[in-house]
Image (cartoon, rainbow, N blue to C red; front, side, top):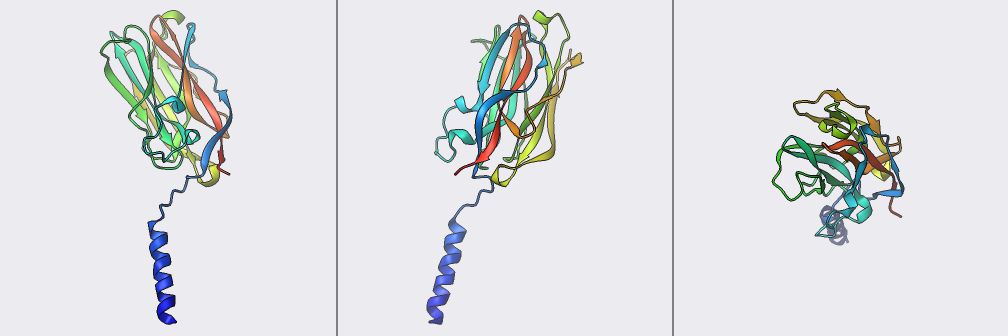
Length: 217
């Protein structure tokens, strides 16, 4: 009897040890998309980049509604802010600020080599973007361009609860003349993408695209 009980205890320990535990596995984004105010200027054009439009998770460990915005990538060509990309982070803790970005380009970057890469991101799987502030050249609206940006994190806890976080990341290029308004998702939402504005100088502003956080049923 004692031997059987010991065997059952050992088996339970082995099984529990094999089962992976992910504290945020049940968190998902839910509901309609809302937008933050604009940080930067709005010369006329817009491009939308959501992390869910990236290639699916090759190992099928993360569903489409478990991705959020974990970082941004900026390139230039001939001093024009003509490339911007999104980095995705999974809410179940399996992927952190993946380097493959969903991108948008404007001339002269389109179809050309780009340079001066700047990446801002969080390296913790439970930290995602909730606020952003861009710096521009402060030129006429049609010629204004992004020359810097800073992002702030919110921490996604168990059961989709959001907590304040102290993480931020930023970059600043030469000719960063004016830091624009810091903008945020609503207090109960996180960023799942961006809407980038552009003009003759390239990308000039960013709005966050946001969703609420819930749990899987």
